[in-house]
Image (tube, rainbow, N blue to C red; front, top):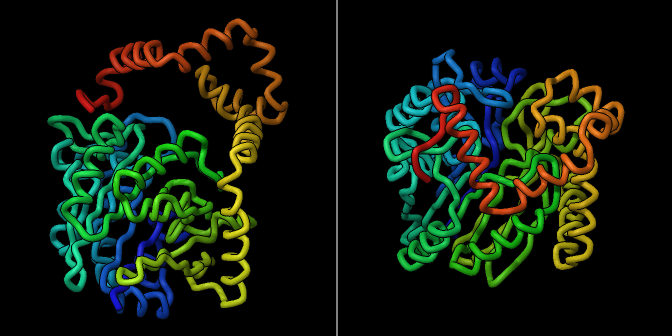
Length: 380
């Protein structure tokens, strides 16, 4: 019986750096399972580099070291997905060093490359006579490849859906890893669900959304399985943050085309399997929440509520306010934004984002304004 294991987001986060150095981050039971699987795939959500030069970007810059690739290979990881929002945190130098480390350790990669043509290339792996296709896509941040620049592959609905359909015609089983959506949200946004369902319609047997840093929900659609968030696999430990400290290993049986879930728990001493009782409880909760995915009204209400909760964080960022302003605005439940920005100003901003033509103009203006300061790919 062929078995594929898929891990979620991996990064030697601050309090796991020493565990990576000591090669003790994973329990022996997990390592045994990885080594005994026919194929192990993981998302490396950072470059593996010795560089200390970060790019100009918003948000944190994170990294692994080249020796971490050697460790991941030793514990059984065969393939690394690189289409994510952090892959260019240390520039092209960092990504190229990552690609070299993977090649040196015979770890296959997909979803990023020396240029957009290389980043787009699918990966086909033979698993006991079954052709398994892998496609990796990321949403746009400071991460994308260009015609002549290294980076991640970008999900472009005008091209990517055709790529999925073509790829399905060449393989027996197709897995699409999509790095996007909103962090810390269990359900798909209305657009994300629509997008993933379309990917399934085009032929993907498994659509796996990563990036949320929490266990989400899943549904069967058009004969395919869509998982909206599997949580972290190896991303450090956070005190009093249970959703951060848990994640699913996706276990795929090719013959049965069946997806199962194993629950991981992060502790200060590394990653362990949850107890059977904990795992059963969590899967029960997962299935209960997943049942709501067919309720359009619920999903819309949930999305509106979540958007309202993060409004005090995102509106100051939108208007370019500093960290102190953002912090105070969160404490005051968005009152600073309401004080400094009128309804009319908010309406103008909404229109710039809502109208596709206006959005493209604004995006182009900022790309040209910040050209040379941040990385803006020449083409998509």
